[in-house]
Length: 165
Image (cartoon, rainbow, N blue to C red; front, top):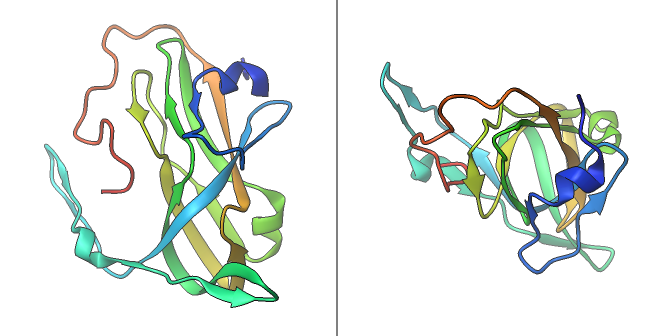
């Protein structure tokens, strides 16, 4: 069953900001930082190795008096203002807001397992069109949760408490 936005909100860490928005069945997340992904990761059988030097922070530029990121076709790591603790009875997901989708980009995340926690959520944006501009702290995706049976073991993997690397 899909949780309501107010149910999801009780697990959200706002970090003192109010850029998020509670919706009917999820929370709109706001972007804090964007990095271009210029290299891959090493995916071993027992772990994944991410080299932070292959994530290049995109500088903000002023457009019409607003602080914006200018993104060109490619893959980007997004860091959000918001964090989360996934309860044992739920699994989290992130999907694009329609405004991002209309601009030729899509945001999808891997599964956010029961027991995972982080102070700042993060995921990947894939831009298929030539250029898109995103304002600092704009809401770009929606975080939602589905209920599940409580698993025997909660998430305790290498990315516990981390964002993108």
